[in-house]
Image 1 (cartoon, rainbow, N blue to C red):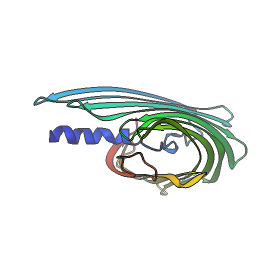
Image 2: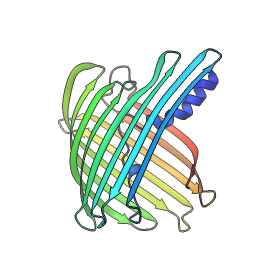
Image 3: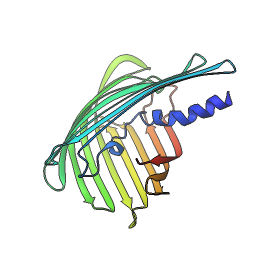
Image 4: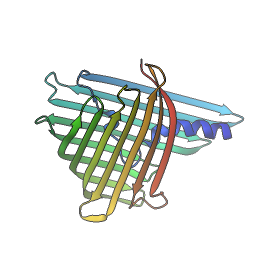
Length: 253
């Protein structure tokens, strides 16, 4: 059982990144030299060790496109994750997110998005979002990329606490920072989200992801990251906060 537990702990890291808040910043194309990216990943895993069963299904997809003039940016991503251990659900979540970004000038952009999400383990039966707002570039160079954004969004949510669909208006405020050293062998990235209910300020969500990556070779990186999430109005029997520490390697082919 311990082997299954630790194996699943490694796998679940990806799933938990799609928890209460979804980190869109780490999915964006940051280079103007790359205009289109498509990534699809489908995994199925089944194990039966010493009469202990573990099954895992995960699908993720990302499509990003910038127009030739670099003024319009489109992002579509989706994820489905389901896992079962000895008849007990360990994860059951999914989302689809679409975002449009329009460059107005060298500093300012306007972006709009829509998203559908569910996470049975975190008590989210369904969550639908639609929002729009500005994205401002504080600095962008070879060493530093710094953005801030503040979007007004409408939220429709059904939780395990209530069969009724509740409607909220929230702000989605974020800071996104990336810093590289002069030799570009070390990179620090940090993204922080703050999403208050504008009609009930005690109801808010905070999410952050901070990572440090350094090059071992030109194609191999070691990455250390910490993710923190907090929901002041989390569903009953669901923890208000979660912390995830990860260490791993990234290969750039």
